[in-house]
View 1 (cartoon, protein in one colour):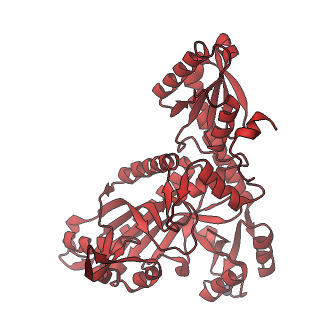
View 2 (cartoon, helix red, strand yellow; view 1 turned 180 degrees about the horizontal axis):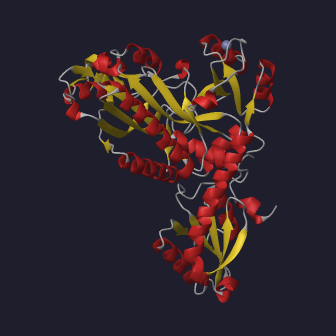
View 3 (spheres, protein in one colour; view 1 turned 90 degrees about the vertical axis):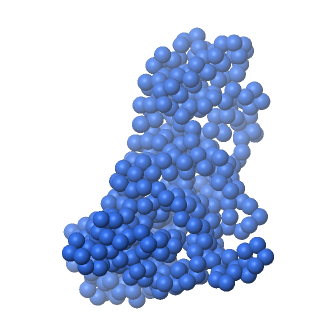
Length: 484
Ligand SMILES: [Zn+2]
């Protein structure tokens, strides 16, 4: 057994036991930890730094499209939740309630927000009076509680973090345009920042958000062949404005109900980053969201403290000044070999090794996490070369994930091949669907797959083939998959 094997934290092989690998990598890379409360996790500093990067990428785009941030209360009175019938029906099985405040029984119990349409709808009714008050474009960064039965770190937890946008518009067209604008914003965050390609489209009515008129989503494919919903954008129509009486005087002085949207992206995205990009050695973070983009490891041999260490420290300072999230691990108690394995497991995109011979030659060795390829670079050109390599890693991770996604979309002309694909290969199955809920239910019961999205593009969704389940007239091509 060599030193590296003896000292590193061992993790399960991703290729052998995906679920075990996922849980181990979350804990050993110190992204999150379990707590005594079932389904509640601690997001540790390394994991929270990933969330901060995702958050920043989203927040910049949310603001660039004219939205502003605000904050609404954590508790929602029960009567508010009950106003929209579908909404309460959809969420009541997973709501946590507050019934006592201090020592007093509350007259009306309070829901710990499972989502904020109800409290925000109530406030919007106060604030919106005229077409001049529109559009309302508000986003909130918050925590959410949904009492889940089966939980898994980042993917499904009782409490999670997210942003939720809530907008009001004058017309149905504006509401729909907003819904799709945000869907595209989410697609862009997934692809450009998380290096995760997605399928964007609408949900079937049985999969839509409780209370929405129509739900749209971006869906990604995890390495085990299961789909993960990355974000959703809902066109609420006038469902909530009628329930909460959000009316405005239009340009012709007539009272109208506003048209609304709501949309959210959560800490689930961290689970997706792990599952899409990770490998047998652990995590592989795309540089744009990696907490540490470059780890500099001085090789501690001989008189390294007077030769290697100053060169390594200068390299880190230079990289930081060039805008790179760089750090150094100069601890003496850990060997270079241990450090290499540790930062591989933690998914740091690029490692810079500097040893005594490198210092003499005036160079450093770059080691990419994604390919493990090595490259010698003159110390003088480190600040130019490192950002370029980080861009290459970002692009390469995206290209790999895109090839995986595209290679795992299969067409099924009949139900037997549909079932066989889900059983043997998983991934997305593209098939014709009649639009009937009975067929969706049957498919779900028999194959555990659901409609993830129906393409937005009418030409892409168009089908001449019969429904894959019942053989009736096909209404649209849909992407089916098993999902998280
Ligand atoms: Zn059918």
